[in-house]
Image (cartoon, rainbow, N blue to C red; front, side, top):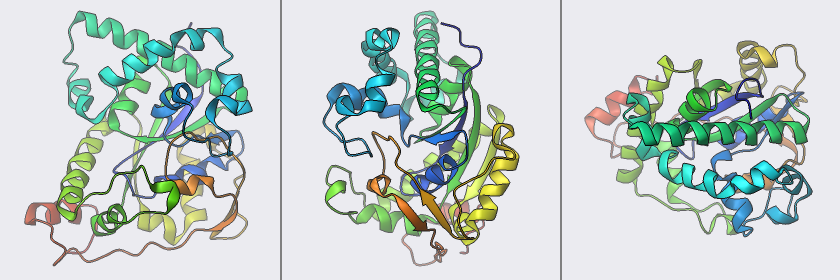
Length: 298
C-alpha cells in the first residue's frame, strides 16, 4: 500500500455542538466531494453494527459500507485500525502528537496506522466516486495523523462557535436519536471549549488552516462556502448544492457517527446563529478573554 496520492481531506476541527454537521454537509454537497461526518468512528461502528448509517441501514447491511469493507486489506486490518485509534487517535494524544513524543515502537505503530488509515480513505473515495472527503471528527489528533502519518492532502477548517450557544446545546437533547450522547454542565463545557480550541490553534503550523466562526458562516452560507471552495484547490470551480442564498439541497449520504441531524435530507434552510454576550454567562475572566479573541462580544 502506497501512502502517496489519495483524496483531499477537508478536516473540520473544533468543539462538539459547534455546527460541524451543517458545515460538513454543505461542503459534501460540492461536486466530486462527499461528506462522512465523524470518520474516526467508522471502523468501530462497522464492526459493532449497532448504530444506523444515515441512509437508515445498519452498517453491515448498508450497500456502501459493505462495498468499502469488501476490500480484503481493510477487512483483515480492522483490529489494527481499532487498536491504532484507541492508542493514538484521541484528544488526550494531541499534545504528544504535536510534540512527537513517542518512542521507536510507537512510531512504527503510528506509521502502520497511518498507512492503513490512508488506505481506508482511498477506498472510501473510490467507492463514493469522489476526490474530496469531508471529515468532521473534530479532534486535532486526527488531522495530525492524516497529515503526518497517512500523508494525505489535508485542509483544516477550525470551526468556532460562541461558547454560550455551545453550552446551551450540550445541556439539551436533540431527541430520540440523541439518547446515547453525553450532556455537559456550563462549567464543563466552557473548560472543554477553551482547551479544545486552544489545541486546534496549534494546527496552524502543521496543516493548511482556516478559522471559520459558525455565526459568520450562517449569516451568508453560500458566500462562505464559495470562499472555502476557493481556498481548497481541489474544490475550485465546482458546483455546490445551494438553491438560494440560504437554502441547500442535502441528498442521501453515508455517515456512521455524528449529530442526529445527519439523518435529515432534502432542502434545508441554513438559519443564522446569533452571537450571545459573554458577560454574566458563568465564564471565568480568562475564558471570556479567550473567547473575545475570536470576536465574541464581552
